[in-house]
Structure formats: structure tokens, C-alpha cells
Amino acid sequence: DVAEFERLRDSPDFEGVSFSFAVYALTSALKTLEAEVLTPAKLRLVAKDGALSVTQLDAVAFADTLATIDNDSQTVDPVADIDASTIQNRIEISWDYSEGESKYASKQEFTDAASVTAYGLSASPLKFSFKGITDDDFIAEFAASLLARLAYPYPTVTAKTHSSKSLVN
Image (cartoon, rainbow, N blue to C red; front, top):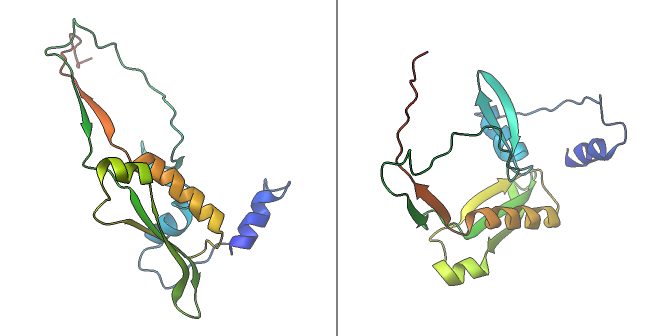
């Protein structure tokens, strides 16, 4: 019930409020939870040190630092490259599922025009289906956010180093 989730979210006394979440006829509750609840909210389940947690996509936080890599620790010069093989500039989203009709009421393909001009159109779209989402603006913002992350190549730097520290205590 999207309206109830939104009402609770926007309520000034949301803290401490609990509600039930029921699922039915699923082959995998985890996959459904990830696809229908976490993905549209830009969240992902992560496991670390035996604990399950939720992380927010598009919100980078650096927690650790590494020793400096410099000329003394490099064995060969670093190589910079751009990997254009993972570009995805087409996204197809189906949303607003009708249980009575057993189909999605809305479906749209989103593209990044600048990426298409620079790299060509992706062979096939990345597809998402959100049964409980009914807000067109939410879908457009989700698509824009995802395209901003996936429509362009990402740089890579390869460096070979050595460490003078022992890995044994």
C-alpha cells in the first residue's frame, strides 16, 4: 500500500510507528523485496561481517584510507583507461501494476541523448518493473538518476605496487 507508506513516511510522528508488510505467491521474498521495495528507493542489501544491512545507492562515503602509493612503491607506471563496455544509456521501466488486469498500466523507455550521440544506443534496455509505484515524476527521477550513473564510461587506473610490510603478525 504505497499511500500508507507515504503517509507514514511524511507523518511527524513516524518514529516508533510499526506496520505490517504482507507478501503472497512469491518464489523468492528476498528477490521481490529487492526488486519492488529496495530498488525504487535506491537501496541495496549488503552483508558485512555476518550482519545484513541496507546501503543507499548514489551516496558514497569513504570509510577507510590506504597507504600512499607513490614512486617508491610502484613497480611499473600506472595505466589509465576508460571502459566503455558497460555503458547503458537505455532504461525501460514498467510501473503501476493492475492486479485485476494482470498488467502494468505504464511503460516507458528513457535514454540519455548525449550518451547516445557520443557512444551509440545500447543494444538492449536495462529493464525494471515496479508494481507498487504509481508516481510518474518518481519514475522519471529514478531513470534520470540511474542514467547519470550508467550512461557514461567510467575511468580505471591500474597500478602495480609492492608492500614492504609483513602480512604476518
